[in-house]
Image (cartoon, rainbow, N blue to C red; front, side, top):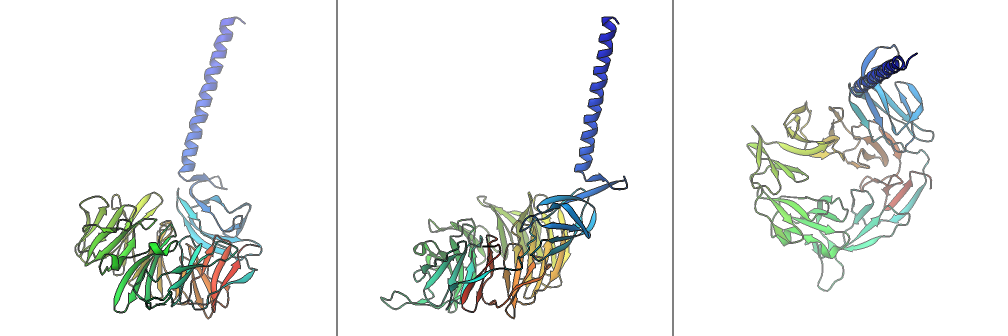
Length: 461
């Protein structure tokens, strides 16, 4: 065979091989595009559009059962492709209780279950601190600190994230006006009624709203150094209607007086000019404030001189500003109606009706749910599922044991629920209903029993 014929055949082979490779790459890209869009070939070799379920849990490595079928080689934390529609998920592990939920998988979308919590059934318990005389307690956002309050001016701070409990005394006599302190005395009595508390995210300050006789005083207590605390009511000679912490270290606050909203610089002890007037309700996220007046909803960026009107109102509304995934959302609550919008283009995401008018609101830790309450009536709007669920705990007095779990105490029995009321479990007994319950670092659970602080080990010691 001459050289020219051989070279021609080789060139044809190369061209054919490159063409086949090109088709393979194009086919792979197309297939990947379909997979990313949720398309899949089922067991009957039919193409259907699916979604994905991601499951993270505490503890990790739980057994996963979906629609009564155990996934033999897959455990939490992991993801699973599922057909669109409803699926029942059951998580289990030997020596632990179980967790279950029915989820709705949507075509081409990811559904995240990042909060399932299983409790070890056999747990070691110990009394760690005699809290006799405690009348009130508050837990920091990271759940590592608890402040024990009594009727004296010497309060106690405890680090819960330590095997050894070492209480720290805090003298609050100079911070609050609602104290009775005789001349020359080193300690006195705390005479105020605590109405509300708010910690900063740095876990160093607590904002107190205290009733002092017929008056209300606002105090920013520095739990690391009480001498640096600020009595806002006294400092600014103002009867504030509302005060909130604006940043993570509580160096800036938002304060409202006579319906006018101001920014307070704690370090320089300065209060700004009026940011907004005629304010009925407001909320904030990052550097944005959303507020309602009698006539409209407005959005104000801190640093801007003028707010942007968003929507006309026929009646005053309660507003919430939050972020879920990468998008910000505005929630408008009017009477029994809840409307959720995307902030950027005001696209309506959901509109649901309630059977009660809420007077308490909470945004989930990652913006993934909106929690509404009036007394013992609760409702949770799930941003992941875009669904509303109303429910009631077994006692009107309840709190948050984690960012995703609510607890209540009935007849000294500690009962927990997921944020949407599901997975009710009784996990401990002989628990006081008057003080908070918390889980610290997923290692310990703390609660009060009579006058003592009790710790249960959630993992083996």
